[in-house]
Image (cartoon, rainbow, N blue to C red):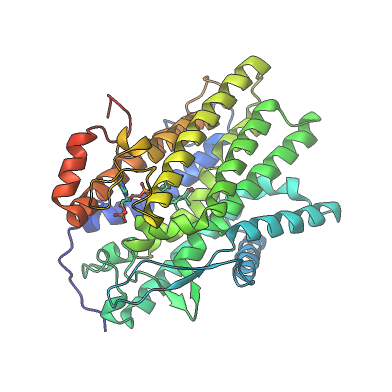
Length: 410
Ligand SMILES: NC(=O)C1=CN([C@@H]2O[C@H](COP(=O)(O)OP(=O)(O)OC[C@H]3O[C@@H](n4cnc5c(N)ncnc54)[C@H](OP(=O)(O)O)[C@@H]3O)[C@@H](O)[C@H]2O)C=CC1
Ligand SMILES: CC(C)CCC[C@@H](C)[C@H]1CC=C2C3=C(CC[C@@]21C)[C@@]1(C)CC[C@H](O)C[C@@H]1CC3
């Protein structure tokens, strides 16, 4: 049985903060979905109206979400081009993970393409976003409850460092078990990359198709948003193995925060710019579109360059192209400029995803604002972990590279 009341420092404002976030996160998601389709599209202020339960609940939407999860689970179980080993666990063992996320994206695209040719009404999806988001939230709540119960019978060595405070609300939110699995099926790894990220680009595509039906052809702004975000999702799935070294996989338990984040928050709020464009068409000329493409390219160049440098360094710390402090820390290249260059690139891309929507509304910039807050908070959490892991070498690195994310600013 798992020990209760671990002494790990409480995060997210403790049980009260966790309880507030349990309500606030879904409420924010529904607020955004409602505002995106309303005329004034005011991010700040009350929602345009409060939907009735009939508008939110649809058994078909629930069935569609479950079918989607079933399809992605089936693709996860297909033979993989590679099986990667995760980081060493408390009991010195290592888990295996299939590397076939990109294959799942391609196969999903083929299936959807065939479906559309056979008459699948993909452009009807935008009309169902509210009930789909409601179904995904319901699934996330029930799934997190099952994960919480599963952790009650997990051995102590399987528990996450946080998320085992003994307070049920806090632990339900953060997640108790580190790598909940049934046989070799890893729930956290599966959810982190596949149903949500692939669902996000599918929703974008459906919005593009509906715009084409409504206005004769998709707008340039809609093409840009779809293209940029497809590149981002394709990149994440192509480099799937890198997710095994993120704090979500190594450190965090699997609870409501990640289950809701992966299954509901990512597909329904990360597609906000495309949703906005369907209801608020934005004319975009070629010169401005070219500048926006350039901004996305710069962001991607920094993001990919930084992540690839770190991956190369991890595989071979004595690689002559990357100098080390002697204690497993990169101090050259992008990592010699700021301590989180990959976050910087990610933020520049986030700006490029909002700009095609113009500057008349704040709503398309929600992602940029939320993401800045998420990365600042994430950077602070990571800093604590690096300090514990590297000690004096981390202090030396901070002195040598004083800025965290943005050179000379932060
Ligand atoms: N779109 C979205 O919603 C989100 C996107 N992201 C993106 O996902 C990617 C992964 O993010 P995340 O896991 O947070 O962060 P990182 O990939 O930056 O991982 C942080 C870890 O990198 C290692 N590290 C830090 N500094 C150095 C250094 N100088 N040299 C070598 N190793 C170092 C440490 O791990 P160790 O000690 O194990 O080596 C540290 O814990 C990022 O590109 C981020 O932008 C992240 C969150 C949300
Ligand atoms: C619901 C809350 C506001 C917080 C939810 C956080 C999650 C949405 C994110 C936590 C870490 C994530 C990562 C990614 C997507 C968002 C979540 C799940 C990536 C898969 C995005 C693509 C990158 O290339 C890798 C990222 C790893 C972390």
